[in-house]
Amino acid sequence: MGAGPAGIEAAAALAASGCGVVVFEKNERPLSNITDKACLFPNFESADTVAAQLLAKLSHPNISLQCGHDVSCITSAGTDPAAGWRVDDESFDAVLLATGYTTFNAKRKEELGYGIYPGVHTSLELEQMIRNKEIRNSISNLPKRIVFLQCVGSRDEKTGNHYCSKLCCVTAVKQAIEVKKLLPSVEAYVFYMDLRMWGQHYEELYRTAQQEYGVKFVRGRISEAGGTFDGRVQIKAEDTLLGLPLRMTSDLLVLMVGMESSDGTRRLSTLCDICGDYGFAQSLDPHLRDNLTPRQGLFVAGACKRPMTLTDSVVDGRSAAFAILSAADNK
Image 1 (tube, rainbow, N blue to C red):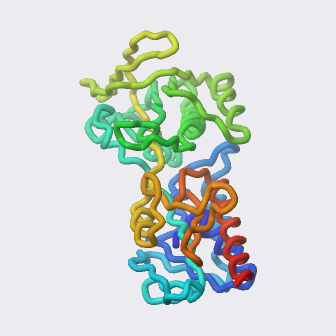
Image 2 (image 1 turned 120 degrees about the vertical axis):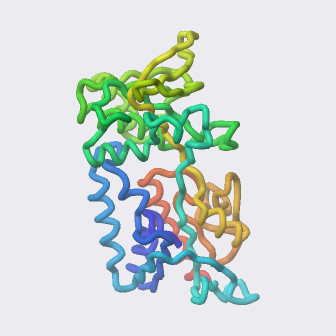
Image 3 (image 1 turned 90 degrees about the horizontal axis):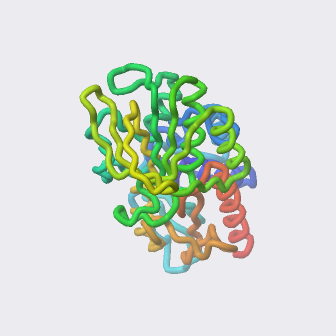
């Protein structure tokens, strides 16, 4: 269930091993969380190129893709745990939950003005501007200053999301570089709690943003954003390194929204009795049995378990396929 990177990679690996695979996708097309991006970190490869390579794997004759299918029911096929599973009206030997994530609704942070002031955007909306090579402020002029705010909906007691979303830091760095490539004269500021550049080449990307593109990083939190008469955004913040209050006006304020469990993940993991912290699906343990669940024949993969990068999700999908094949061999 789920035609994201984890679900597709698992389906491809299972199909190559001779298994018949049905992929249920709630949306009308697969990979909705990739095809809305411009380029991917850390090497700025086209998101369309990566998506095309993943989609090509669905052409395997052993794979049946059913888009627009919102699974409503998952039940054990019988009292014997080895009897398999029923998904809606179909029977399967095994079920893989790969229902992915959704992004935080920035309207829940009213003090940041999203949905109130036209100059406040989410990182997904900026991604579309970059994809279309058309970055404009609220009155359709080229922006002179853009401010990025990290950890919107993550590491936040007020929203109830105490965890790090893992992608926001490097996404802000990537987007700041992309903006500077399109608009070399624009001022780009990134406000952060602390930068968690924990992937290969991520730290180098951070240095490149500073040294080659002049992106400025401010350690501090924005407490409030408001609109100005000319459609810009005025922010109030604190530079926590200097210990001084700060006020700045920007053409665009970009909120780096974190990852949350999707509606499908919450509903289906609850239905299967594997719903864990923050509504993510709970695996058997995060070390050696991370694709297994307490329910025999039920497996989990990808960002339905926790925030993951695209690379993490692909690798986890392959791991899930191996776990499914191993379980079948041990029957």
